[in-house]
Image (cartoon, rainbow, N blue to C red; front, top):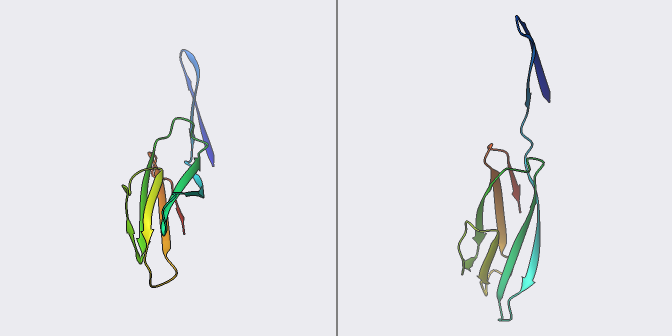
Length: 102
């Protein structure tokens, strides 16, 4: 959504514009870590706000993080049981647009 306000003053026409923030989009890729049951995931973020910065929040059910949870990449050791680990990533831009990838 785009809003444009026009204001006519003594010195002429002033145009004010604003654009609603769009949430970033995220794709997650897996990278081989070289160790059994250890995985690294990498977040690829696209955002129409070219100057936006992003915060990352990774979580995992049934496994153990082996790297920070606030970075674009995330490493973890998979649990022996259950055989399925669910990894969730939420990316939030500095305008509070967010997306969750599961």
